[in-house]
Image (cartoon, rainbow, N blue to C red; front, side, top):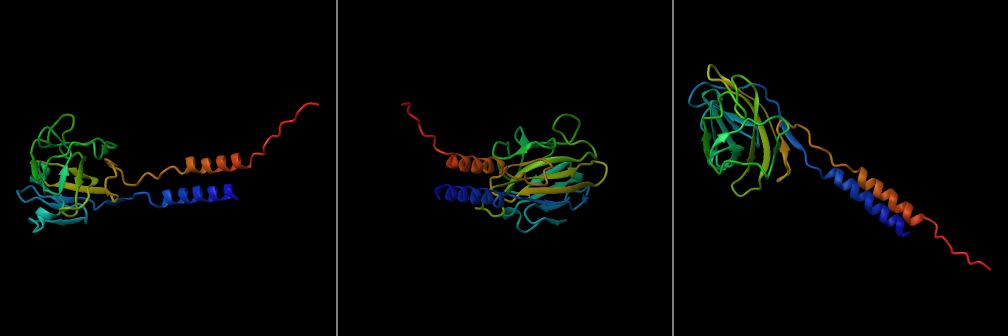
Length: 209
């Protein structure tokens, strides 16, 4: 009877682990233009809203503002890109982890040295990923995500796609669009093992005459 109760508990634990896993919110709103001017384009990551003019909630919402074709990129206080140095936004390789260990800009800032030729730079008309952490409200929890952009200094750039983990504090990889499901196999094997152990017949010692 006890073995059945323990098995039931472990099976419930397996199910709960599968149900409560995080999911990724992904948007492939292809080719949102980044004009080659000082206004550029605005993207609010948590809602997917875009705007061609300075948003009224810039200080209280997670906005990214690439302008001059993406050669310059500004960020609101609630959305902070992964950087190197003091403020240069990094072009992350696909699969690069974005999370608590990443180096994010401290607050509202702007980057103008992320375009060029070399490691970690955005090349001309070559799609790249920038990693971010953001909050939907000033006192809200931190989320992690990425934004794919194509930078140009000879014409409009593009915001290609973006995604973020909908569980606060959960990391994401650059370019990742589907959450990695937890492996229930270990717990399932544990269930079988425990049941087998509990049902193993007790050996009796036989004394010689």
